[in-house]
Length: 141
Image (cartoon, rainbow, N blue to C red; front, side, top):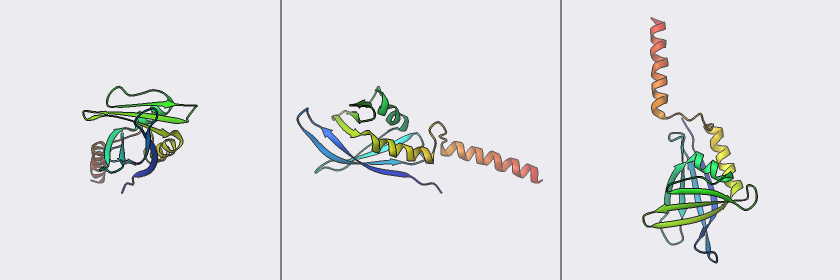
């Protein structure tokens, strides 16, 4: 049995310097995919949009600019104040701004479930378990 970590964060979808919208974002972490965080953005009047990116990218982006591809994250304001997340897609890009403390709390909960740097995939776990069981059978004979 494995559990997941879930959280809800209110972010600002920044349209321009003068206009932004509050949106709810569901955060999900599943140890079956230990390197990834899933973000589901609930846009007003539209179907939710899901993005999956590296947990480490989110962690690093809280304290320094990170990301070179479709997801770029960087801190803004004072120390651990806010975080900007820029998402690039063929249909366009989006800029979101979130308070850092709820993201930090979510990441701390993921770290309790699977410590950063100790991720192991299901296939690796299955191989290790098979190895342990085969040694146990050899010793029992």
